[in-house]
Length: 120
Image (cartoon, rainbow, N blue to C red; front, top):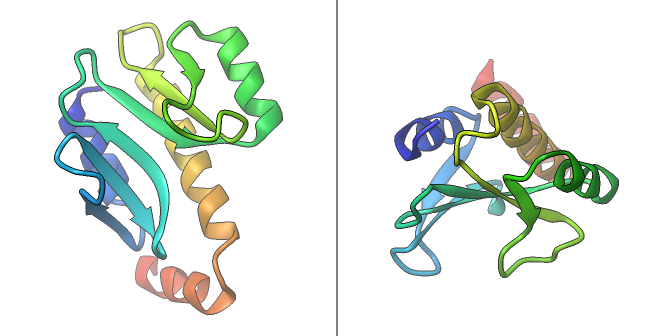
């Protein structure tokens, strides 16, 4: 996956919004005002940081050289994935889906209900 494909995949999620709250170097993907992905705008190779359940986060780091503790994030709950060709596009999409779902399940019910209507 390249940077454009990552952005398109994230933006296709119901309620997803792309912002640059930390400056031009980090594209932040949010749903319901909460971050589910951060894409390095200038990183080469491309990186994406994703929210993850702590036990799964540790397992992914052990199983994939491309996965490391979240850069400048809570390392227990975030992984940074370097898209160096060693992680499949399907794995990366699954990890984005998991991150998005984790964030959505913690949103207030009225916000979640709005997302369901939007995807509808």
